Image (tube, rainbow, N blue to C red; front, top):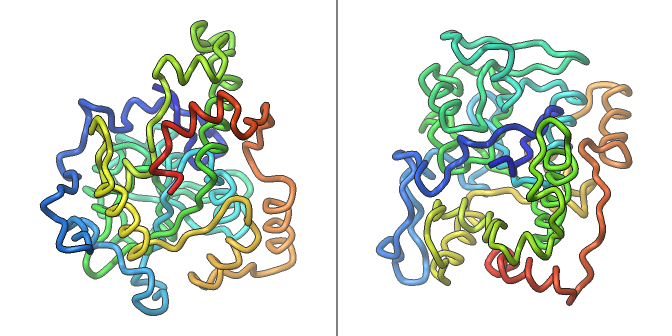
Length: 314
């Protein structure tokens, strides 16, 4: 299914490698209720490769920033600012292009406008495994790792090169509506890659027919991608992952969010051109901007979307 926009200018890609009910990495086991000790959930072993968000100052050359890309929540802006404005070398999906998937040596690819990507694709299970096999993080080539696959992405880091998790959240109802309209306009309605069934659907019909995501963030935080109904325990675990491990920004407060990221990671524009680029991306030229009909509060669409995102809303 083509439902995720990854942090790249070539945003929409085939996401058949994103975990589905019968396609889950064996390295990323679900967190079970047995892991609950009292009121404090025990995080799964792979999270040991991520530093706690409050475990001291970020150490350049030791810690590695790891951006968890929640679809339609500013991932393109993060990618553009880090790559185009601050000229950091990124491990994301774009590095897997140009036939690099078969290359058995890491290198930095130089794109237009001085944007640099390591030649791996960290948006898919296969790409993450290849990056792990080639020792992406120990190589020191990537200044930032970007992926929507939180649990699988943690396997890239090591006890001596820990990941520092950061992410941007968006109101789940706004995010879900944006995702639907963006995919409908950029894919389903296109002549060569369209889908007649979805091209003419209203958002209400899409949700009533059961095609929509269900609590995407909570499921990816807990790795409960196939579970029928999530529980309060799942929500508790998801919140604990974020509390312990993640620096969080908000899409509706982009300026404050990036100020926070820059202070935490020590990122600074080196000159006036980089400062202008950053301001431009934040204030009016953010990538993949897409206008769509608003979802009015308490409308039928709002109620349907809310029902599928009750845990994410918390």
